[in-house]
Image 1 (tube, rainbow, N blue to C red):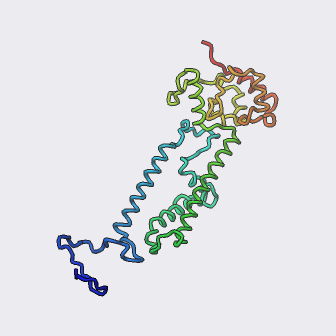
Image 2 (image 1 turned 60 degrees about the vertical axis):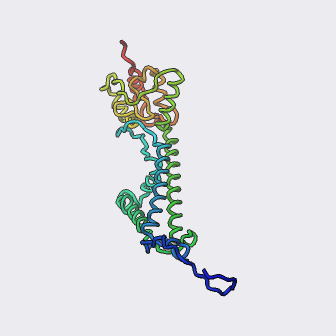
Image 3 (image 1 turned 90 degrees about the vertical axis):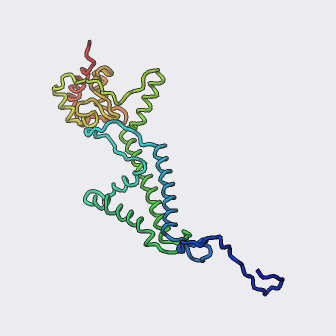
Length: 290
């Protein structure tokens, strides 16, 4: 370096020959030295995006493990009162498929067409949005689409959950996992063994299954809630041993005027003779004497 105190004296820096020259000319050592430029998309930017994606995916998996989907009772195609519900992270798509323009005759559009366009646009986003601006408020199109998508997912999820709760209230149903937790709590308080739902149920059968009253039960659509064999399903109790719990008069009263929100009245759809015949037959459904 030149010596002296003159302000216009040229300063020359001598490099260190021990520092090896970079063999990667495509990767600048300091991106700030190129105003308006950014790092190379491959591999720098893409690698960082992958790392962020991995962190988000791990967080999502931890969330799903911490809040698992409730385990319901075994599937029963004869249970007309069953309300199907997917896992919470699919609620937005479940609600989306309820709308008429993406279901029924347009089911292919709702299940393949629109999701395919959305995922395709997500994959092509780096190639479609090639602007150099990184601040979101300087990228109105990309930021608006991202915001609308996020708002739509949250809205559809909330609407789907509210509709599910409304249906439970109308049908007078208690979610199966809540019922299981309640039964387990009651068993623990009594010092009994926790109910095992994987154990085969005890074989029970109707008394006088060919009685004409069974035809009345089918006519009244009792099998829609209590199953075809009247052994119950979901929140609808079994009628196989209902005679142990209610007398004929109590059964006739329940059939006539209903009970709670789950059992509707049949005084308008069944005659007094049919109600009496059905109540008489149900009162015979008792535990066989040993």
